[in-house]
Image 1 (cartoon, rainbow, N blue to C red):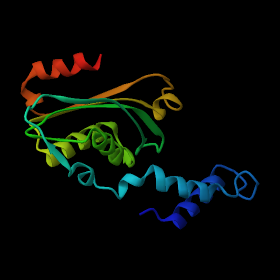
Image 2 (image 1 turned 90 degrees about the horizontal axis):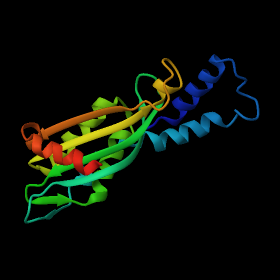
Image 3 (image 1 turned 90 degrees about the vertical axis):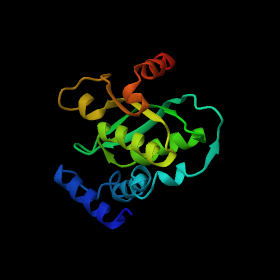
Length: 184
């Protein structure tokens, strides 16, 4: 759980540290606003993806399921700056599927934490493997990182792409190729 008082104190110190007057009109409520915002944007710290993936439905066929263009927003744990983009998820059911919205909720659980994109991609794939027991999972994330665009190298529009494959996707290049064709 977010410690609101610690966040408020930290924001005050940060503002003072960069030379701001924390008593000026535009800033006096900022520590409180930031503390409340952190409850929202880091809400995944308290959530378990398994709760969203526990209700499944029986299926007779085991054809690939793809949910693409799942928008997410996360925060880089190295610079505390946002990164955002789209997640694409494919899985091969083994007799059961989960509601499509639950895939997006799984992305949200892990995105609402301090993150690395590489780690986020793997966490999503592993949660699906552990909770759905599918034959295979492929997760691809495309994101723009503000730590790349507004500081450092300053390359706006650059995209980082990460891919994690589990199960049948590791051995079957035809399945992987089918996934990429369906993303187009």
